[in-house]
Length: 96
Image 1 (tube, rainbow, N blue to C red):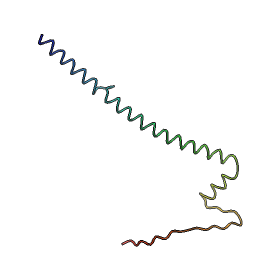
Image 2 (image 1 turned 30 degrees about the horizontal axis):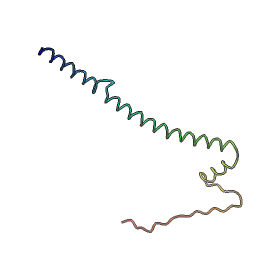
Image 3 (image 1 turned 90 degrees about the vertical axis):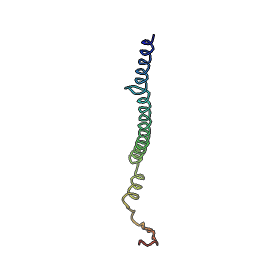
Image 4 (image 1 turned 180 degrees about the vertical axis):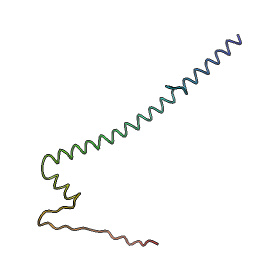
């Protein structure tokens, strides 16, 4: 009888180890779930970026207005007859 109890306890310990720590265990499933959440969040950010790029491409293909806007904002270009004003902020704090 004592041998059976010891064998059952040993079997229980082995099964618990497999359940908690072996490959495919509960802990590895939790880690995998966290990893999946992280990857999904990154995928969502990349999807938003791709959507914005697709919209930019469609705007650039559709006409000159988007091209003009890009030229103005990114390259600082102006049309003939326009004036360009640059406002520079002055910081009064002195470095010691």
